[in-house]
Amino acid sequence: MATVEMVMPKMGESIIEGTILTWLKSEGDSIEQDESVLEVATDKVDTEVPSSHAGVLKKILVNEGDVVAVGAPIAIIEVKGEVEENEQIPEVSITEPKETEEKEEILAVAPAQTSTIMGSAAKVSNTNDDRFYSPLVQSIAKEENISKEELSTVPGTGKDGRVTKNDILSYLKNRKASVQQTDQLISGTPAPSISAGDEIIEMDRMRKMISERMLESKRISPHVTSFVEADVTNIVLWRNKVKDEYKKKEGEPITFTPFFVHALAKAIQDFPMINISVDGTKIIKKKDINIGIAVALPSGNLIVPVIKKANELNLVGLSKKINDLANRARNNKLGADDLSGGTYTLSNVGSFGNVMGTPIIVQPQVAIMAVGAITKKPAVIETPTGDVIAIRHKMFLSHSYDHRVVDGSLGGMFVKRVAEYLESFDIETKL
Image (cartoon, rainbow, N blue to C red; front, side):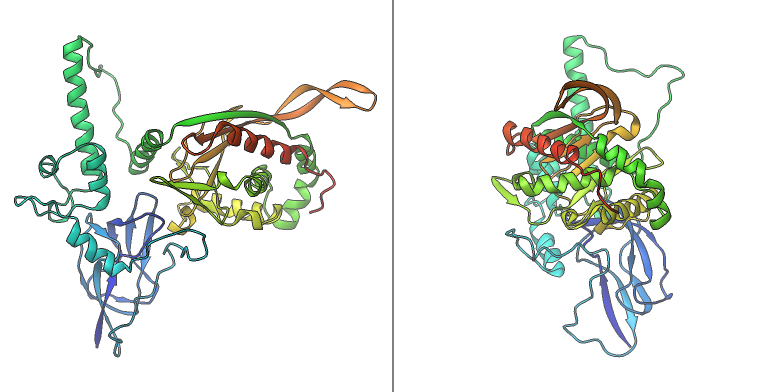
């Protein structure tokens, strides 16, 4: 019998660690290759991790609740036969797609090397504090001007007292609250109070993550929003004409979202500098057009699955992909790969009856569009015999963009181009 190490897999773009939620198998259990062994939580998704080999779960190396770096060993599997000394542990299905086809400059480090580098370089150089600090924790500490000495006082709930992201964010929240209370005492402003009968509701984990990400995005990106009203009468009439035939043929409905994504993908091809991200003072121009769509969950939270290479899909292909992602999102069946790699995001606030909104950018993207409810309005129409007033189907497009790298001219022209593609939809289009 031989043994192999099962390691924490890479579970999406920019994910460097995960939290062990639940071990689905116990020591001594037989497991098949690709059989789910444990459940892991990241900042993006909760997902089950399959076994890299078939055999017996010999030893569990990390406990539930531990935060583990990508590439670090999490279990020992006893397998039949011999294992080559330099055999690579296969990537699991939730591994982030390789970026070799993208026109980006990246530094590639093997998972095991990453773990070694993090372990050796992420300790604070304080003789009284030899705890491990992840790059994320160190980055937050640097942004908030937390000294090494102060960082060493932050209580850690991770393994061996490690400070997790939630630990340092909680510490910052309490520190800021303390400063605010002091300021209120000085200024005479009363602190918020809780009255009898008020209900206190603890945020769930996803709501906490959404809160953190929204605050982070507003801190990073100076948001500017441009608005355009689009006449989508042709789209409404065409959909009404074919929706019954489409459902009978494809077995599922066709919504308006595929039309919006199709127009967005075409406009991004016209204005590729919308399809970028920012890394310090560098602009990364993305090759692929990967459009995220915000989906409302039964809990009321939002999640953003991604349509990869949306520009390569027609209306039917987009409709099927969107329906699949939305259904799996609502049933908690999305994997990490479904949520990673987005380069632009669409939010359909019209589904809530809103006519427009000012969406917050999904980092590290630089723009996001909200589409409002489609409403009937009287409008002036130019005809060969003069202007007439007619009832048209109209909607507002709201384009929020990062003013560090997207100027008003580009942001405005882009949303106008999307509207033009929607308005020019050919009502004679065949399924």
